[in-house]
Length: 432
Length: 72
Image (tube, rainbow over all chains, first blue to last red; front, side, top):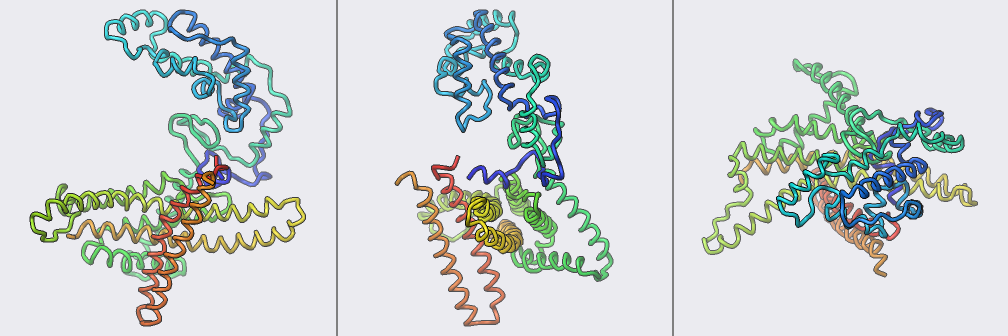
């Protein structure tokens, strides 16, 4: 299931048909750094380096209570651990920190032996140990330092013999069709996860593309309608129809006549952006940026911020929260019990409503693509068997029809998101 | 049987959602037949309610499919 999700998940590469973007890398230095770091030859070399560093540190008497097992035994244990399916391509430091038989390491690590202060050490003893330790390297977390020292791809390239041709061939095969996104600001752990820093992902680029298209289209539309002139062609009329629909049927009924015009540009932006992102998911080899939690929850966050700020601007900061509870004219005895409860429920409801706004959008997009994947997966599963001539046309026709439904869902979800945003904003600027 | 809790969950969620949206649709259709001039409004409200129900249905589906013993 999680492998299937990879097509819908965010990634740090763009996918193209394989014959359009062949990977013809020839040597180890041509491959990206994180790719080399996932290679098993590199990981064995790195494990050996980390072991050597660890051994020198422990021998220099800098840490107590850690007995280092012999090198070959530990490396063999690491390799058999790595063979398990879920530990595929995990490096040695994660083996030491996570595997089951490695309590000799995990306990001191948890107790802070590899940093500079023990749990129950008093101030003076701690200062004295820092003094003694600074003579050696002056750094607080030397296990972290060992990890970064051993993580040296250039030295690996120089010290070990080059990869065999079959290995390079198989890596090229794996990287065929993947347009890797250059990462000037961060490092990657693998194709789908980042290690540190700010990594640019496919969805980020797609969102920028959607934003650029929207800016271009709507500034052109705005100049066309600038002096009350009617728009002429079909496409511009379509956009104008969308915008008018949103203003007259969504914003004005939900927010009320004279307030609505302030929020209409925001609602337009939300609708168009969500629609653009959803529709990008229909294009092959692109993906739907709204299929990621970060995007949808950020959009919901925008709505939440608008609600709070608009409500606070209308009623004052405290008044906004007081407005959540409707005034019901209860007698004092009942009010003491009921009003706090109501307040709690309303405030909880506020947060939950907005979070569910984001989750609904995400779930619809991901679920639709998942079902599409499942239908095509039937054809893939039948590949090579005798039922394929029957299954394949059904799968293709089913996928095509389902994609039409997906198109409808893209529009519908954008509309629902915008409508609910308008509803929430409306209820924030009106007295209950 | 406990290990199939995900599958049971998905089935229950499907039943719940289908029942709910079915009731919604039947009420909408009935009222559209009674008063055809407001059919447009009713259709809009029906779509919105269906989208809301599906929203948390999908969320529950996600959580349940994560319980699948073969999901990693």
